Length: 258
Image (cartoon, rainbow, N blue to C red; front, side):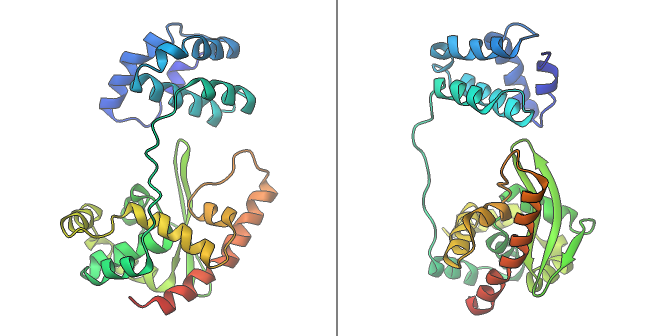
């Protein structure tokens, strides 16, 4: 397969693209590989790859790309990934308490507070929130009882955002005030005042979903972690269950009142 040109079409920053172009030929010198040759390169040179964090990251990118394009089987991907050294455990399991979240909200002015609420009750990644703000005037949405479902279709390799669910009250404020919202300004304020960072809103949302009795698979769905390779019927059933369950978050918001 002639894969390098296709792989390099990914959404990389200019700086990182330069790093890839420098490293890629050192690990994969040929332009064309059979599937088995690609696997052999990774497995046979894993000792060399594992000595460089950049090489490890690059090989992971290649394997993720192969998974996205369905070029290798699950067994082949697993075999390759087992050969590549895992990063030292830097897993951040911290989830803010309800009181910590309320304390943060109470120290924010109206527009930053609105933006923080968007992250809290959507579970989006930071970059997805930025995309939502920039494109809210053109994105389609469906109205339900107490909430809206916004069609994002914001796809980035293996991190995707298909829909954004928001309580109607938050959505209406977003459409009116989106031009006054700034993620970077909010981040700066949170850092300067040692408040709960945006990244923890996503963890808080997921945990709150589970507490409210929303199935884990639906909480994953809200956050864009849809299972690969599932049939259309299964995908649509999860979408229906997501629509049915989000009202629990709306009810919680009504009693939250920070």
